[in-house]
Image (cartoon, rainbow, N blue to C red; front, side):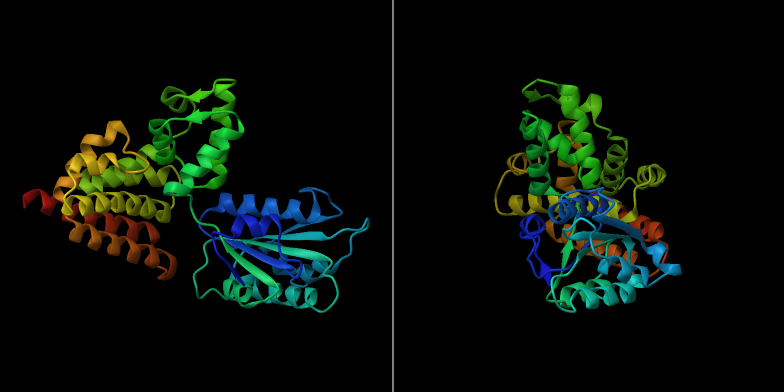
Length: 347
């Protein structure tokens, strides 16, 4: 069965009794790990009890495919339900996972919960289709935190430490975080430790603590593309990839930027003054980027922004499915957008 994003947290906190296998997959590897940990604690009560929790990798199954089935059917010495976590799974593990799920569903209370952790899987993935098609198994997608969802993660994490963030601070944090749930939480924990017993988080606190080097490079890349600065884009992309960012992360950052411009363009076309339309964005535009964002909003029409979004969506699909060099696909589409921006400057 397929678990919707709205149901994911509630399901992981209290999975259905008949469920004996869960696939956690998606581009946010940190969120995959976090949710796997949550589900492990829910079932076994611990993350590291050697009698209740067994961890395997896809590599462990290459030499011994039957090991997964053996581990899932092993009984707990002290009673209780065990958890078997399979990390780094993909379509190459579908056969082994299928066998394990069949054994777990063979009748009687299953001795284990099988938790499978995977990366981004397309709709045609055999592993994803296996879990979505099983009534006693579930597939849960783990997407990157964005927009209002990311703001809620930030606010909730800070609130647990007795901290509050104003709109400007929240907007800054939302801009530099979100590419990976694990990194986001780690940076927020570090920020909370730095702030200590203070009630409010200041922008200066964030800039002193939160690691945002990669975020600055991403900003440079997407703003260069939106401004038509091909040379600046080339330099920024080189630094982005040196920082370790994936092409999908870059494409998603560009999509968010173009979507925000598109939202402003739509409001302006409906009669809203541009400054008011920009001011209404959430998270708000970072004050140091306000002039660049406003300049881009003037040269891009809603129709041309829609075309740019289509190009970015096609590029992301190409990165995931064509087998072509993913960085080249990413660079090519952003250069197309930069050329379109230059045309906008001339019209």
